[in-house]
Length: 484
Ligand code: NAP
Image (cartoon, rainbow, N blue to C red; front, side, top):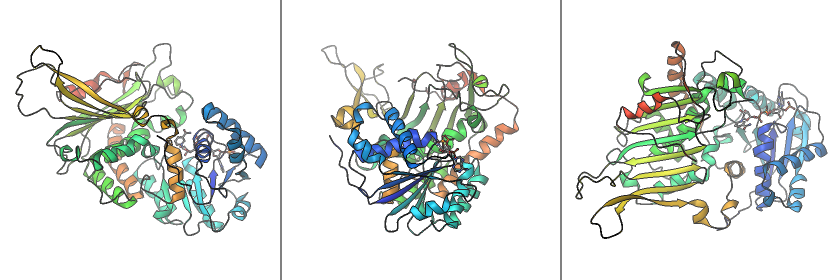
């Protein structure tokens, strides 16, 4: 199945931080792929900026390399690549000074969509907002795209929101959480609200518990300086996992429109109970299998930063009272996988008597790898041996179900950048949502910072520390296995 491509309006997209890792690895390859798919109109232009002294030609050359490195070879078409590179211009600019701003302002065309992507360290977001204002580029209808992390705690997120709000309306601010751009994450909403099948069962009466797992195999080597100030709670739970939890738990919005969806997500965050200290396990990967441990990777021997978190959260509202949400994320785990598993309650009475094969229904939504949805159901074991039950999966891999052309489905950055150009904020976080998420996260972090205990060490390639297993065992439940 080939997805339908509707070209966007002509635009000027300015990328601040154009020589950085994110721009080279994600943003520009994503734009190339959209161009290849025919979504960029002839008049679309991309202006890169950074302090490095480059001209248009050298930057185009760098981006040619970046695209050849980060886009699969079968997606490279030389005519399309040349057409894309011809759209790129470069302006040398210092976010903290005056260099380059006037030149940039002179290049922005009236009458096209104007978007400014802040792909620089968060310490520069305020400078960029002020710079755009000072040089008259915060025109009505323009958009700014703000990367993560959005603040370090509630106070800094509020301050950043206030700085941006001084120069831009909320409708102009696109706070990126790339998880929201993933195909399966949006499918979560399609599954819930586009079918009659699940929604009547989607509550504490029928759902026993929900597990959300985001597991990585990589450690932090090379990024230790950044990561050590963050840890898994700030890096993964406050943003990505919180967004997944919201999409699972929220009430049906009245329409798939930005504020309708975001209002419902905000209500979920506000309904979250404070996490009990006994309901959270922090871990840090140890050395093993010939690989360094976290302390060595981060070059901070005494670090108390967690690279793993498992916690139990409760959403206190009519729909979910009594159904726990178990969240787990970590680095250097057994496999790279992200999934949401909704485990339904057992039937109230088994007419087949006690049977090993009768298991709870589980709906598994896999975000990566191999995006898809699986429903585990109980059926009769085939054959004449009486009524014996077995569990089988109804398995739908999107790649298989959608057939040839599925590889053309846009990745998260492609979709999100096109949404910015189209002016659709549905998949971006609103300021109050981000603040509410920090308001829930801050006390958890403050509580363990006040204690002197260290995160529990865990073996690389494992499922995390033993205590995380106990978090579920003591509730009579088990984590799903982490496997590719
Ligand atoms: P990076 O590799 O360190 O790049 C930073 C960019 O900012 C460079 O182009 C740098 O170029 C430019 N820059 C630095 N100081 C500047 C100044 N005073 N004025 C103008 N430009 C300046 O960082 P990154 O990894 O691309 O990350 C960018 C943002 O995305 C960060 O907020 C990060 O948290 C977020 N993010 C990154 C990733 C990722 O995978 N990399 C993932 C999620 C979010 P010059 O030094 O030449 O000026």
